[in-house]
Image 1: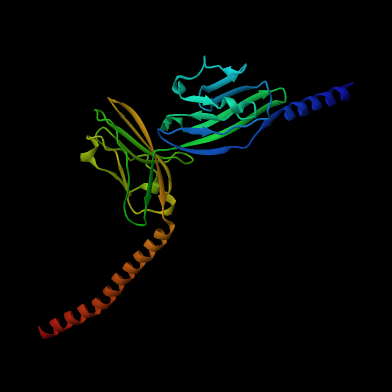
Image 2 (image 1 turned 90 degrees about the vertical axis):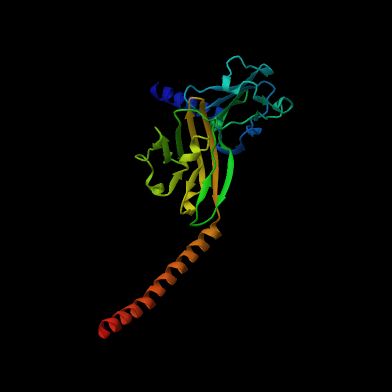
Length: 276
């Protein structure tokens, strides 16, 4: 009897596992203020329930569909009037979401949940939001642009959108706050203090490296409100290599000149002393 119960339990777990299909993550990149499609497909069925949620605290509902119509009563207000499904494609197994007026706050993970008579499917979409693309070159300085509405009590935080969200540069109380700055950026970042109170929070990054490429977030807070901007920084690999070669040549030339001049100075000094 115990063996029969165990076999039934295993069969039930196997059945449920087969009924719920979890697809691999999909990466999507979109630009601020533009429209963006978050892809999602399922095994087509005339009766389908679709739930789009954002995988953040509270799991805000992005869009829902059931009984052949949208169900937006519990839609999160941040997505109001900004989402839609391709109604003529749902019967063909397309549950993709159209997100309009993309903002930097839309960045993050989304789940597409579909339920039909065939089972349940879940897809995870990683949405990366780009505000501005910047390409910089080796060794020189690079400016990451960021602007905000002027106001009092300015607070600025630059972070890199990688694991751990390393702090690149911070400013508050009318001065830099670099106590928690990531060591990879120490001595390489600066803000234009005379421009901050004109609404310019652009960051100057010196001595560019290939490792600097990636997405950066500029967060500003004033009495006028909060704003977040995403900057996508690219580096030219060829220029990086070329830059280091030029740098090496310059250093070698300086050392060479120093080696040539030093003996001459020593000889000149000896002659001067000898004449005296």
